[in-house]
Image 1 (tube, one colour):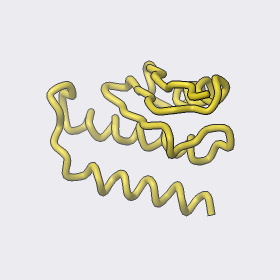
Image 2 (cartoon, helix red, strand yellow):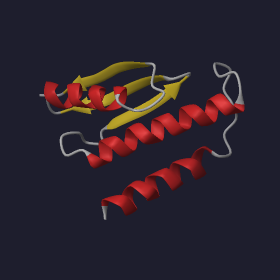
Image 3 (cartoon, rainbow, N blue to C red):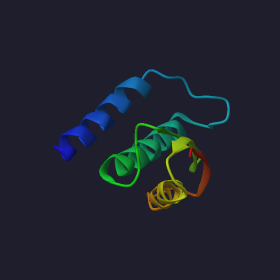
Image 4 (cartoon, rainbow, N blue to C red):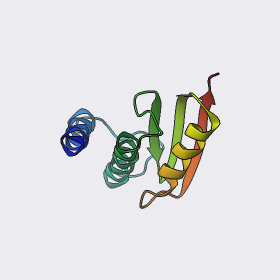
Length: 102
């Protein structure tokens, strides 16, 4: 079941971003695709993990830098999200802007 959910997330992300233009901060279409792939991989890791809520955390990637935003229920969840993002191939830096909501 998890594999179906993850595969669905990947397909939906690809479809949703397929028609988007390259932003001024990204140099090429290839870079845009690479960043979309990185963001999708991070989201998939969140979906697979039992400690991180993939629904409350937004993921953006630009030139290999991943930015995490949203809310976590604990510092441990915030830290785990950062660890999972850093473990994704081609991630150069992680900016963890997740807010711990008590």
